[in-house]
Picture 1: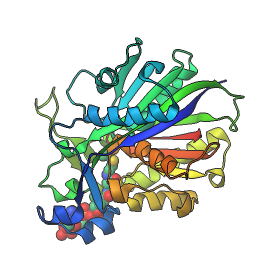
Picture 2: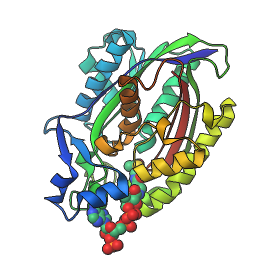
Picture 3: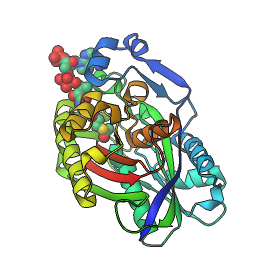
Length: 324
Ligand code: ACO
């Protein structure tokens, strides 16, 4: 059975760090409120003239370097983002050009907000499994700072900018859960929950980019339930148990959501990769960023079982199990 094996990961964060104390100088908030409600202490914010494609390209270069591959060694580029440089073309084609790919590869974007990376990974994995490509670069990249209403303290304190990337390569496995690579992915959406989390603009509606709007409490309520359910679905599909998972790498939206989901699944805090404190919620970038941090500090190692899950605007939600 063809498997999509992780060949390398990398990430990039903009240089500028904005702390909770910095925000408290501009809006009616406090370090204590933000930390207690979300676990966030700081976020990175892209510089003027620094675009989502720049963040994505920097992360991609690091992932390719880790994989020992060059820009012409990837057949497919999938970028998960809700904050593209332009309405079109797809960020993936901009990244393709910035990387200098000249091998006739293909690239497109996937838009599933904070679940974007799980959707992009599932897409690339299925292209590999179908035999249409032999390698893929899967990127989550966002500049959410550009779609925040900086006067809405209920949302602007929660998000940050960043990018993470993963290189996948086709390998033959036995078709069992001992194989290396993506073992399963599970995706869901429910468009009737639009009003809980959306951006109030777009090319076809207002003609303007718009700002993120969120019913925080309602999103929170759905998050723990839906993410726990989709993780159970992944475990059942692979015949694996929660205690076999080496690393739980959830979407980084809120420390309380992460703790609640881990508790529900019976995964100890020592097996959860948490980056929300330093990165805030970087939407589609948060999982590949956290994976790259976990690999960078030697927590995630060859052969480890890694469980990812996310929920985002749509609502969309999904999970995946990867043997590293
Ligand atoms: N600083 C100080 N006070 C604030 C702030 C702030 N930044 N923001 C809101 N408050 C106030 C509110 O005005 C309210 O005051 P009131 O009681 O006088 O009316 C009080 O704090 C409580 O507000 P709530 O919104 O009820 O606070 P809650 O405990 O629910 O926490 C939060 C809010 C952190 C947003 C939480 O609901 C949450 O994390 N929800 C999930 C969000 C999430 O995961 N979003 C990402 C999804 S991913 C994606 O797709 C983008």
